[in-house]
Image 1 (cartoon, helix red, strand yellow):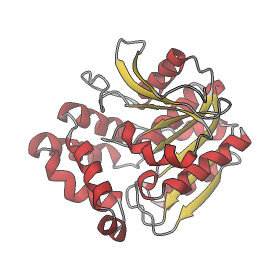
Image 2 (spheres, one colour):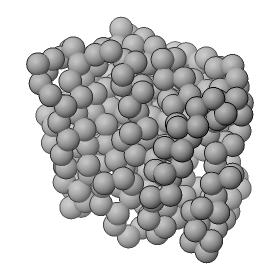
Image 3 (tube, helix red, strand yellow):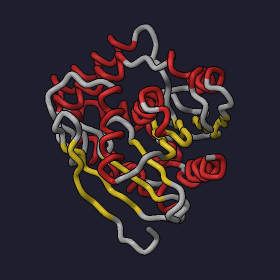
Length: 271
């Protein structure tokens, strides 16, 4: 695929939802699917893809309810999002790939690995968790309802301090502003349905069954999915390797894309 141009198109899933995707050519040997965070879109991975420097052919998609993809009425589930990945992979002719996700995308990645294990060459889990805890349904419902009642702008102050470290925000206002604009472009019903999805997600039962290489990264300042949650993943996924990124907060693919790209390159060697 090294001679091919980047391809952007839509794939139709098993339930008729149109998913927007981008296929970025690399070395023609290794394949990687990247799944974005809540309320982000494909552009979330631009810096990581650039840092990969062709180490993979990369498939990036807008999850349902996000970006240019269809936004059907909820409820949503991480299993549904996982099956969307399988359908997009079928559409582009990929049998298997390294699958990686950040935050929400990591939950979706875990669901994909649980439901479609033969299609996984390796797992990249960034700033994520298998379960948000006992109070997750209420906490996520509260966030979704706040958006519905007060608009997404009411959440920007809360979100931006969780996304990036203080020094990074000051030094990179253009990256912060771009993330805020993507966030504000979300449709409220889809955002609220995705919040409810994350509140209900529990992928813990899948973890001991995984038998593929797994790289876990988490920021030392990640308050959304703190290192304790990453450690749970590392302790329960056989052979998983975990590293804590000092001084990094929740959006590591935007804050330290080279570090995330290096983790993915490690998976390319192990797959």
